[in-house]
Length: 310
Image (cartoon, rainbow, N blue to C red; front, side):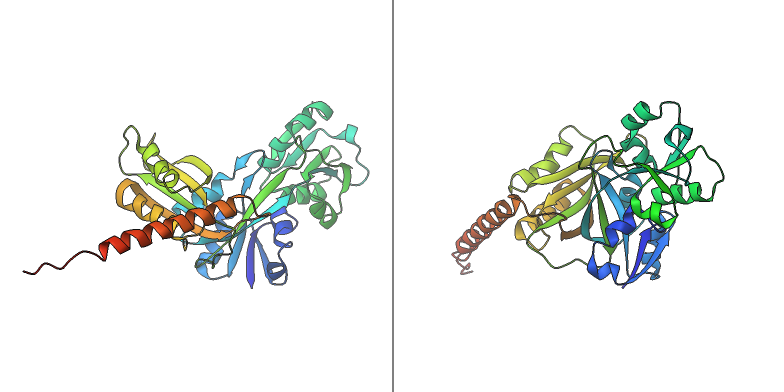
């Protein structure tokens, strides 16, 4: 498999990719931005692409959401959850007291805001395209007061010394990545469906009407987030993740009703969930069984309809 990923080499995205046996054994190509990764798969230069989509502390990666929703027809194929540990790294010989400027990906800087304020209050934070790009910049620089926030993979790759480990403000930090490609994966039994809902009319209760389609079918939502539609100021769409697969009748029925009655829907995929199975699996199965029983009951009633003699 030819796999594109958000690079350069040594990013957390590559680290997440390497946890997947089938992806790690393929041909890996880094790209400088999330849109470039998606575009490479769209063009056929890669079979699939790995990009970050959500961090436990900083929330969604908006460029990934927007690219999938507005600029691509690719679908999410799977989730990859990665524990994230951030280190402060510099050229060999640089001490913590020497650091006057810290460079990293904006999400990484934000995740270490408290540590930086306590340990390096005078240091200037500066954004880079990725944590790995920050490590590469520090390695190439001759400055003795510059450090990068990155992972150990990037530090090893670019020959940096680790000045401090686990500097993130919250322990057990995790980032979620997604593999994007074509088609819908078969149900695994522990799946998630992602959609974007565009309201047909901006009226009181329109969001409630969307959410009721899921509540009425006992479908659990795991994410609800609004984003600008790019169509006009104050015009928003809703990103929704729910438990279940589009092959489940209860999910399919909810999507049918949404499209028929409530909103324009962009389907982003049904795919295996990252991490261990949760109690929601049995809840979804029970809802599916109840929906099948109800559908069979209605069909039995319709089967009793007499033909008009005329």
